[in-house]
Image (tube, rainbow, N blue to C red; front, side, top):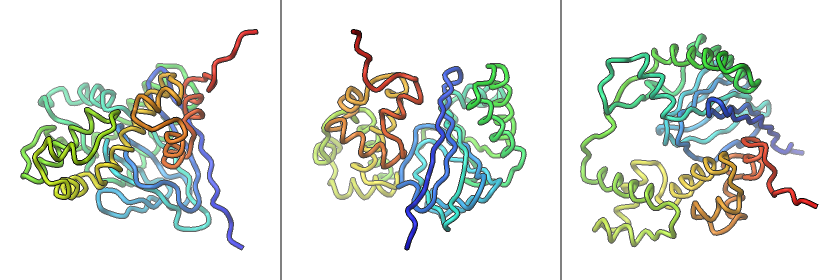
Length: 286
């Protein structure tokens, strides 16, 4: 008789640093393909963590650091019944830029941080990530958390390369980028693919093909994940799931809830409560 997949999630959000810290264990299938608008720095504690990203399959073992950039599509699976355990930090691009600018004072404007590889056996970086998670999740004094984070950035200097934010693209690549920009600007609206194709004067099948080749997802699937990323931001700020669903473009709260649970293994109400300590519904006065 087969066992049901087992998982648990310990999620924290540090209000001082605006950093999300997660420690989780999964057996079986963990996550469908999805992306985040933040940098992800994590370390595998136990088991083998298998995932696909940047068109490759990766297997992260105990002590291995995994590094993902904003927009990197990735999934997650356990390869055996033991499952895997990992801890991870979600760092906003603005925070990364602030710390890296202090380290690389002569960095030209218009460049962004990219990781040279998805996996690394850098033990000092793994230990720094582990320590930072402990301090952030344990609500350590602000100066201790800042010092722990600085250790991560110091070790990251061995893994970065710099790339210009604005580049010239071939025609198909440019079409994908224009579609991406439109979805970024109108994610909360009831957008039709035909409308986008008409505005860009392109065939919708060509548009879909170019977008999927560039971003790894069809436009409608990418749009769902964009809405989910925006929903996380609003929920973390204290907005209710019903208000968030309407603002980011989901049909209703249950539609948001189904997708949120599918991608993050948490309900919107649970995520909001862990970020803010606010109840899902206001407490009525007697």
